[in-house]
Image (cartoon, rainbow, N blue to C red):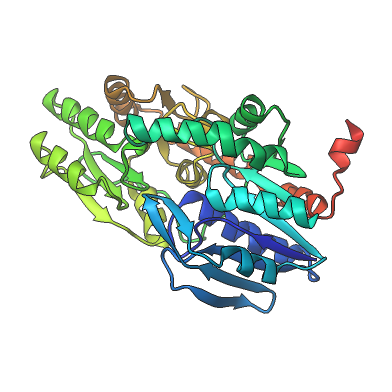
Length: 378
């Protein structure tokens, strides 16, 4: 069998979907020695062309342009390249509903009578950007995202909240398959010396809520609660966030570490007092999952599948999105909680047990050949 997977971004480009896809590919190849995988992705983050990751693992990067930030559109020749990759033994896979190449792949698979599996990572309409961008995204969801979901032979949702979103948007059921999480053996949680440290890992875009985190931190420091921030990531909002930090008097208390590699991000998470994810929208947030598996105290917005990782008030704290006051209160409670380490240890134990690739990989393998025992039993 030949799987042609089409995540719009792929490592070395950093992000949750691309990290998910890369790990999924590695696991599928380990499970099936007869499987070949070709990743057909954009040339954002790496040169266009062909890259060999293994004997049965190839990456083909198409050239294109990001007309809108984080929304690459391929140059002419995209269809010809896709057609050349596909044969009678091909199964197509797409990730996240609203990208133009995925609509085209849906049409192509339908006409070529190829099996297609879609993985939905989103759990709400687009929240980032200005009002116009959100309006355009809503139109895209209503016009183009529905065919991507409805025409797929199978739809996988990365969380229960993503499955509900698929049902509401496209009127079809999605199979919930949690991703697994494994950490390097040398990543061990430790408590920083001195002032409490909150760590954030992710892109610096307004939809991630980092501005809310800066506002909450400034409020805490004005009230005499010491808290330092270490922000791992880069993005189009970086300069605005730096200016906001200076305006709020946080220049000496916030460190912008820029884009970091995955190992560095994990070490930052392991060394902080509390991990914070202030995002306005998520599917199943990878960084929250990693922080939970490490056994860190977590404060996060209650969006997407985050509540499927954290039991609010038991293993961590969930707050409403876009609410800096609630975020500040939760951060203060976390850094002063005498049971913080015990809660974090419990969270790590539960997370490592619940989120495993083993069952999900078996279900993915069955879907690729059009066999779903769970569906037949229902």
